Each structure stands twice: as structure tokens, then as C-alpha cells.
Image 1 (cartoon, each protein chain N blue to C red):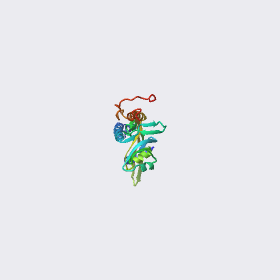
Image 2: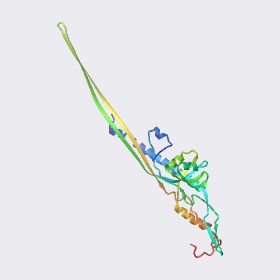
Image 3: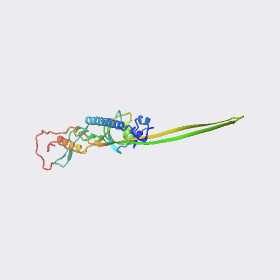
Image 4: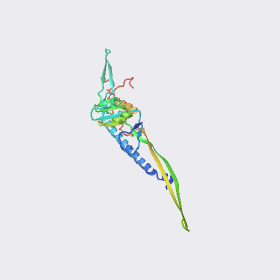
Length: 178
Length: 104
């Protein structure tokens, strides 16, 4: 009969660790793919933004506002980023409750016979002994897999840097302009 | 804490899967048609509507899981607003589109 130690050795811990690792890797890939697809949608979705409003105060004191032409910018450009997650922790807990019982049962059956007749006597005694040994084993096992994911910053090169080259002829800058 | 709703495999194996997510977060939601009703039904709030079937919404994690299973929803993914990038983009683009000083 296998002992408790043998039962514990039979726990497929290396296999569990391997499967957990593969599961985490697969889940990480799925998460990354999902985030990349979201990033792609965010890059394709544009919104018109009015980024400048010119306030003009006329000589008579009337004020008017002129909006600059709206510029179509992608959601990614204006800072809407997909949330990237990363597995930060994975734990395997295996709990086993092993109960072994052993019992021995001995049955002794004794029978005696005696016969007395004319000038003769006979007697017999029979003993029947039986031994039964019973083994019982109860194993309860539970395993618990815990993974923890944390949001991480998106890759730094997920969107190109926007650089503006302004070739307009320079004009005088008012003193109060920043 | 939410019981994972979609897979039948854990139930067959007698396993229980619990997922604990963020309380509320911003999601990009894309549906086949009008998606606002599904978001409202799950207690979410529409923050920005790009098209009829594409919008940004704030959802609870329960709501996110429910909407993810909705057959009319094509995609729902968590997003966040990078304030630094928004600020930088605004500054650069403002300079690019601003009229020449004094020309207005």
C-alpha cells in the first residue's frame, strides 16, 4: 500500500506548473492581441478637433470668435490608449487530505465433537481460524491556481511622435503671446 | 468577484473560476448596430460617441463581462486616457493650426 509520502510524490506538480506557465503565456498573447487590435481601432478612429479659436476685438469694441479649421486626429494621437495587462504573479496551491486506515479481523471457529459408544470413544476438535486484513484509503485533494494581472504602460513606440514643421513666414509676435 | 460566465469546462471539472476586476473603467465598445442601449442596460455611462456603433463608455467589471457576451457587441476593450500625451498633442496641434499672429 502506498504511503502518504508516496501519495504526495504522485502529485503532478511539475505538470501543473508547466500547464500554468503555458496557460499564462497563451493568455498573455491573447491579451496583447486584444490590446493591439484595440490600438488599431483607436488609430483608425478620428475625431475632428478645433484646436484654436481666435478672438477678435474690433475697433468698435465688438468681439467675434473664429474657429480654426477642425483637424482630424486619431484617438491614439490624442492619448486614448488601449490598456495593456501583464501577468505579475501566478501561484499554485495544492492541498491534500490523505487518510489511511488498516484493520485486522481474526475469526476463530472452534467446534468439538465427542462420541461415546460401546467400548469406544472418539472425539474431534476442529479449529478454523481466518484472518482478514482490511486497508482503507481516502484522498481528498484540492488545487488552487491564482494569477494576478496588473495594467502596464503601453509600448513607448505604439504611436508615432507628432512633429510639426511650420514653414509659414514668420511674423511679428505680440509681446503678450507665450 | 465574478464567476466566469462563458466556459462550461470549469463546471464539468468541478472547478470554480473567480475573476476580480477593477470597479469601473473606460471601455471602447463597438457593436453591430446601436450599442448604447446595451451599455445603459448594464448600468454603464456613455462618455463619447464616435459613430452609432462605436463609443467610449464607463462600465463596471460586471457590466464589461455581460457586454462581452452580448451577441450584438463586436468588440469591447479597456482603454485609458494618457493625459500627458493628450496635453502634448494639444500643444503641438494648436501651434500647427493656429492662425499667424495678427492675421486674424
